[in-house]
Image (cartoon, rainbow, N blue to C red; front, side):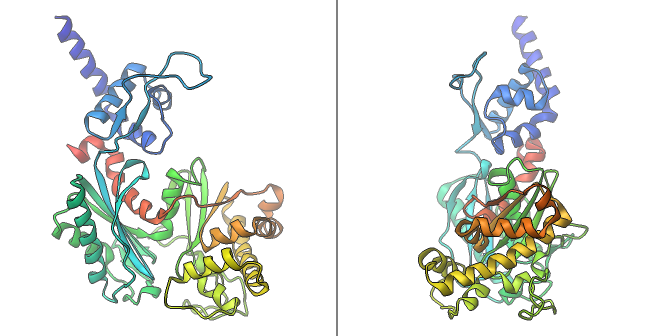
Length: 406
C-alpha cells in the first residue's frame, strides 16, 4: 500500500510541475539554475516538485542531475544536486550563410557546438543550391555522430520578412530580393529526412539572441547588438528578454543610419550609412588597402588592426571607423535607452583596440551616455549567429519539452 501511495504522490507532484518543465529547461539551458535548490527558488515551487521536474527532464534525455549533491565552497545549508544539460542529448542542425561562405553545425542545449562541417567559401547565386549544401553537410554530421535531431535553424545576412520568411535584401549574396529562404530551407530539411521544424532568421538578430542567453548579453533586460561581419552592418534588440523584430521582422536595420552625410552611396539610396562607412570593406578602403581574394574581408581587416596598428594609416582608418560607429551607437542609445550594448565582428575588434575612444564618442553624443554610462561590451561567443540559429530550433522544446519530444 505504501508503495502505491508513494507512486501516486510522485505522479501528482509531476502533474503539478508539468507546466514548469519548459521554464525549468530554459533555466538550465541558459545556466541560470546550476543546482536543484536554485531551480526550486526560480520556479517558485516546492523542493519535491522541483525534484520531480528535474527527474522528468532527465528522463527525456535533456539534462543531467548529479546523483551526489555537494555544497559550493563557503556556502551554508543543505547541499543541492547540480544540474547541467545532457552532453549526449539531442541536437539541432544549425546553418549560417554569409557573403564569404557557409557553415553547418550540430548544437546541443546550453549553446554547445557538438560538431561542425568544414566551412565552404563559395556561395552560389541560387539560394536553393546553397541551402541544399548546408543541409547536406548537416545531414552528414548527423550520420557521423548518430545524434537525435529535433529541429533546424538557419541564419542569413538579410532582413527576413515575416510571416513568409523572405530574404528581402541579400545584397552581398547576389540572391534575388525576396528569396523564399524559409520555405527552401524547410523543404531541404524534410527531403533530407531530418526530424523537427525548420526556422530562418537574420544573422545579427540571432547573434543577439545567442549572446543574450549564453554570452555577453546574459542578464541584460534591454540589449542592443550591433555587428559587422564580412559585409554590411546589422543591429538587433532584445527587449525585456525577448528578441524584438517589429511588426514584420524588419526592425533594427541600423546599417542605414547616416553617419557621414557626404560619404559613400549606399544600396538603400542614401549616402554615408553605417552599412558602407563602418564595415570591413570601408576599413580597408580607409586604410588604402586593396581587398585581396585570398581570405575574407573581415579577416583581412582584423589582421591589419591586430598586427599593424602601429602603422599610421591603419591607426587613422581604425579611428575613423570608431568615430563613425560611435555616432551611430549614440543615436541608437538616445532612441532605445538599452542597459547594455554589445558589438560583434569588426566592431568587436575596434572596441578591443581602443575602448576609451569609442565609449567617449557615445557618451559625448548621447543624452543617456552623459547621464550614466551605458556598458559597451564585446560579444563573447564564437559563431554566435550559428548558435542563435540553433536557439530558433530549440525554442519549441524549451516551450513544451514533452510535446516536442514525446
